[in-house]
Every structure is written in C-alpha cells, then in structure tokens.
Amino acid sequence: MNTTHPFYLHFEKIYGARWPRLFEALQHKEQQVARKNILSASDDSSKNWSSFEVKPELPNCYWLPESGSVQPERNADELLDVYVMDPASVMVARALDVQEGDRVLDMCAAPGGKSLVMIEALKNDGEIFCNDLSPERRERLKKVIQQYVPRDIRDRVWVTGKDGVQFGLKEAESFDRILLDAPCSGERHILENPTAQSEWSPRRTEHLATRQYSLLAAALLAVKSGGRIVYSTCSISPEENDEVIRKLLKKKKTVVKLVEASPGIGGERTEFGVAYLPDRCGFGPLYFAVIEKT
Image (cartoon, rainbow, N blue to C red; front, side, top):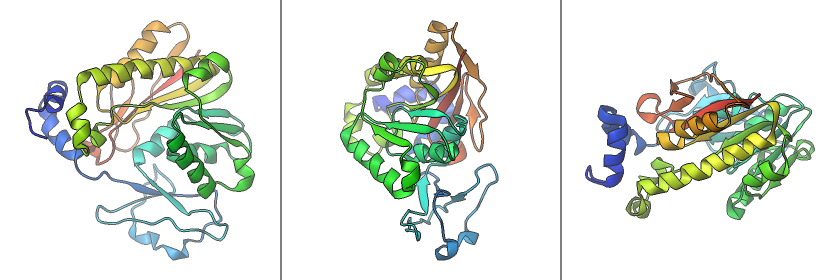
C-alpha cells in the first residue's frame, strides 16, 4: 500500500505524526504469548519454559520470542497444554472480572481464546454461553473448547449461534458478565489482504460502528443490574472504539456507568477505555472499555 491510498490518508488524519510508525508496526507479526492451560493436568517436562519470559502481571503466560514459536501438545488427559494468543486478549478477558458462580455471555466468542480465560475464572460453579453467528467460526470455537476444557467443565459451557442482538430482546437481565468482542474493521488484516485494501472505504467503518452499537445496546439489556460488560475490538478506528462508548453513555446515561480500566502491560488510556497499539507495545491492536449497568 502506498501513502496515497485512501486507507493511509484516512488514518494519517487521525494519528498525525504517529501514523507512519503505527502503519509499519501493523505490517509486522505481533508479539504473542503461550498461555498455559491450567484446566489440564499438565506435564511441563516436554517444554523448556526457562527460556521464555514470564511477567507477573500475566501469570501462566510465556512470552514468545520474535523468532520462536510453541506448538500445543496433548497432556496425559488428552487436553492441549498451551493456547497461543495476543497478550492484550488475555488482559481484555480478565477485565470482565468473572467470578465463580457467574452466568457469563461471550457474545462474539470465536475463535475462543478469551472464552478459555473466562471458563477458568468460573472455577467450580457458574456457566458460560459462547456465541458466534458464523457457522464456520462456531465449529472452530467448539473444537477449541473440546481441545482445552475437561468434559465435566464442558457441561457448563454452551455454544450458541444467535445474532447477538437477540440476547437483548429475549434474555433481558440474564447475565452477570458479558464480553462483546465486536466484529470490526481489523486493519491489521486489511493490510495483509490486497482485495480488502481495494474494497476499503470509510463507509465500511461507519456501517460497522452502527452494528457495534446495536450489539452493545443489546448487551446492556441482557446484563443484570450491577453486572459488567467489556466492549472490545481489534480496530484502530476511534469511530469503532471510543465513539461507540460515547454514544452509549449519551443515550443510556441513566443506566450506565463507565468503569476505569487498568491499562495493564503496554496499554495507553483513551477517553473511555484502553488501547494496545503495536508501535508502542509490540502487540494488538486491541481496544476495550468496561461498563457497569447501574
């Protein structure tokens, strides 16, 4: 992509002098972690974890070197031992603060890495609904759950295929915690795909922001009073991030409270949430905001 492409010029207006560095970083492989599957009876002898960095803010996560990789392997219980993911995704899932006994909804759950974090947080009680509208993505989600979650815990994990808006219409005040990792522009993926680049326009972002708000408003209906929602995207567009939250706070101000989110490792605060951008932290992009229903 050259510097006269509408995509480049659009984000240059938003990020100014920062944009060339961010544009370059988006085209490099992001930092990842191998998150240990604590639901499995793991045997660490097959991997030399001493060569990987561990940070106390993200326990059970091994930071992969730029040139290194880890292949998940089956433990004695036939479950896979690690799940490789973006560290920001771990922090987003933990921001939901799932408690034992909660009824949880992961509204757009595939491929399932964040769901695994929340399933672990439920411990010995509670249930989670892992939802995805796409049949193909839902099959991948089912496979991840089968590969990482013991059978007795899977009895409390439900995979569904609804349009997320339906939860607001049909299951009002039903969930203690809702994660909405909303469908978004995914600019990192656009830069990897020449067809997506040729089809990109600001109008697509506008359409997505409308859909994102509809899903977030549905999540607000579906969560219990006093419950928590985490809204997240992998977009760098403020229109899909803070502006969606701004719209919710304006339209639903009598029933919504913004919760100050911890930026964790490498995060930078935005007006309403936290962003992880690869030019500064080496991973992402990922944005999230935390909301409570009053």
